[in-house]
Image 1 (cartoon, one colour):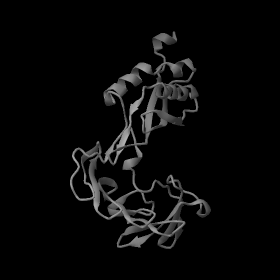
Image 2 (image 1 turned 90 degrees about the vertical axis):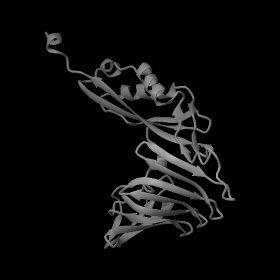
Image 3 (image 1 turned 60 degrees about the vertical axis):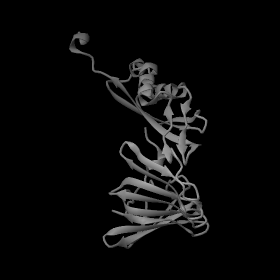
Image 4 (image 1 turned 45 degrees about the vertical axis):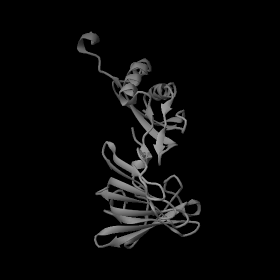
Length: 253
């Protein structure tokens, strides 16, 4: 499963407008690259001491949104500590990276006091803590927890194996090969699924995408994601692979 929480600050391609060693990039509220007139924010980055230093500003107010260093001008490898600010210009959270990999995040109250902290690795959260505004630690505080199928990953894998019609590509007459589908969906705060759609559809097996969508839509209610100790929306992607094997020599006769 993939989720937005642990992505880098900007998910962008090589669409920047370069001017010498300074670049401007406009993007929408959901992180997609766009034009200036419809942009939610603009990132300005320039070469500094062998790295690319980026400053991200809210378009309407020109207030600093985030600031940090990248390994290259495509902004896909954040380095070190990033400071991120809300639209009032107050520090919202800091994020620490090692060659593009998120290590930890620290969140703050509007007052500037520390609110929560989480460390992560390739498997997700490792440690997490939270404090009230008086600085007292809140027991069992959850900064982030991904939404999951009831019963956990093992139950989800069993559900997928049981519910998916593996022969759908053969039934559709697709030639021998692998047919990969990716389905994106949203898990709401109450655990219901919505916005289910295939983002990768094999040209020679559209029936595969329809089958994958059906399987996701028919799944039971999920356990919602948790963010800052409260239920939160969660965006997930689930890959499917359908296989059509070459007929054996015996079957060809």
